[in-house]
Image (cartoon, rainbow, N blue to C red; front, side):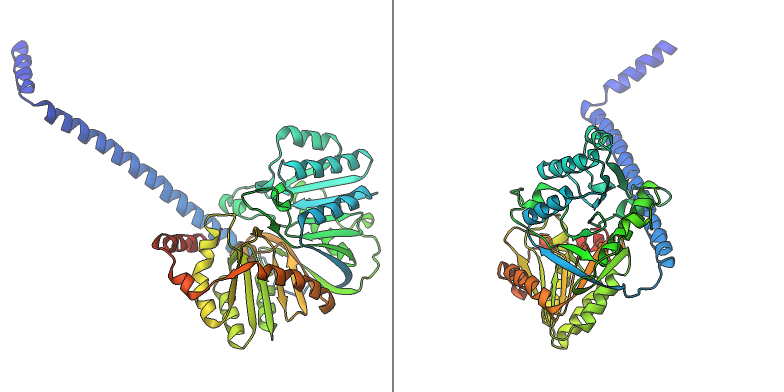
Length: 433
C-alpha cells in the first residue's frame, strides 16, 4: 500500500508543470523577502522612536536646569582680527614658541594632516621643555591615530577627548558637541574664533578652495574668562579640577576696547542674537556657514527689515555638507520679500561666524547662525564694542560681499523639484544639521 501511495504521488507531481513549481518557489522567496523588509522597517522605526524620546527628554532636562540669560561681564581688553589661516597660525606658533608656563588648547576639529602635525610637534616640543600643555579635542572631530595619541601623551602633553557619546541619552550626547575653539597661553594671550586645525582651513584643500574665516587674538582682562571656560571644560572631560588656581589667572593689564565673552552650553546664543537683531537701527550684517535660524529669529529679522534696517546675510555658495544649504532655502523667500539681502560667497568656502550691528557691536566666535549652535552645542563668542576696531572688520566684510552673488526671488522660482524635495528633507533634519 505504501509503495502504491508513493507511485500515485509521483504521478500527481509529474503532472505539475515546471512553471507552476517555479511560481510556488518564487512566491516563497518573495514572502521571505517581505518579512525581511518588514523586520528592517520595524527596527528602523524603533530606532527613530528611541531617538525622538532620547533627544526630547534630554533636551527638556537641559532646558529645565539652564539659568535664564544674563549679560556677560564687560572687560577691558585688546583684540587682533584674523581673516586668513596662514596669518593666524603663524601668529599662534610665535606665541606658543614663547610660552613659559602653560598652553591650554581646545578645538572642535583636529586632523592628521600637515598643519595638524606641525601643531602637535610644537606642543610636544614645549612639553618636553617643561611647559605644562593641555590639549582637548571634541570626540567627533579628533582624527588622530592611536599611535600618535600615545606619542603625544608620552611627550608630556596632557590629552583629553571631550563629549564622548554616553548613556542614558546616547543620541542626544552624540549630537551635543563641544564646538568651542579656545587657546590660552601663559594666561596672557588667548585665541577664539572659527578656525579649526586642518589643512583646509589654510586653503590647501582644492575641493574647498580659499577658506574665509574670522578669528581673534585677545589680551587683557577677558583672557581670564576664556581661561575659566577652558578649565571648566577640561574638568568635565578629564576629571582634573584646577579651576581657580592662581597661576592660571595672572593679574591682567586692562586693554583699550570693551568686550564681552559669551559662553553657551546649548542655550543663550539665540538670546544674544535676538537682542542684537532687536537693537539694530540702521545696518545688520550676519556671516555664517550654516543659516538655519528657526522661526523666532527669522521673525525678528523680518521685523527688523520692515522697520528699515539694512540686513545682509553672507553664506557659502558651495557648502561643506550636502543638506546644509537646502535647510537654509526654506527661509529665503520670506526674508527676501521682507527686504533682507542674502549673499552667497563664491570665492572658496565661507566659514566666518559674525554679527555686526550698526558698526557699533561686533560678535565673532564659534557659533553658527543655526539651531545646532543655538540649542545644542557648546559655543563661545566675543562681543566687541568699539567702532574704530569694527571698521577694520567691515573692510573684510565688504570684500567678502563683493565676492558674493545675491539670491533673488527668480533664483528661488527656478529651483528644480529635486532640490525642493531636498529642502523638505533638510527642514525635517534641520535641528541636527
